[in-house]
Amino acid sequence: MSKSKIEWTESTWNPVSGCTKISNGCENCYAERMAKRLQAMGTKGYENGFKVTLHPHALEKPLKLKKSQMIFVNSMSDIFHKDIPDEYIFKIFEVMNKAHWHTFQVLTKRPERLAQMADKLNWTKNIWMGVTVEANDYVSRVDYLRSLDIKVKFLSIEPLIDSVDKMDYTNIDWVIVGGESGYGCREIKKEWVLEVKKKCEKDNIPFFFKQWGGVNKKKNGRLLDGKIYDEIPLV
Image (cartoon, rainbow, N blue to C red; front, side, top):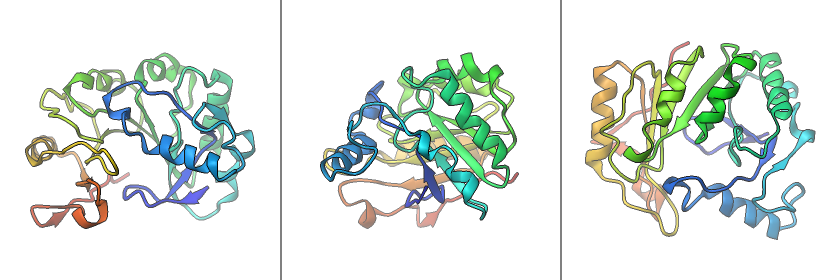
């Protein structure tokens, strides 16, 4: 477990690390850069770089953290990656079920497997499930999520690299938007952000604007028309 600088969470928990690119949003993956840096530093657990690696020693970490936290699960991977065994996913969920005092935020770009496994998983109310949608090409990911019986279903529209004006927000409880940051980052257009904000306002969905991104993320900040939007679901 580690404290997180991600604006919409408090801590990160990585019982798995490593992933493979699946769509355009993965092109400048921050987790891949970080994993390779940790490998170069000789950090324990990152000997394989960004290859999918299970970390059983980390499974029970949330149970040892007694203060209630908002926890982003697998910030360095994707819980529904094909190389993570079903049995291991069940173990991750068992820990989340037991650690009822925390709120767990799970995010995937692989909603097909999420939908296949959903009925076998125990979706206690402290588990929030989200999918990443970075452009109109990927709005179909939301269809796998919206029908599931989960307390909070959310969208991470980050990095927003094109319009998502074809998105259907039905049965979505929270939306996060952000631009890409770091070397080689792609442009985010204000009009794309405002499209999302307008839809959220129309459907009374909490809207969280994380960042403009860019090479100098800190300088560009997260003000949208002079205001910070950091709404989260009330549960």
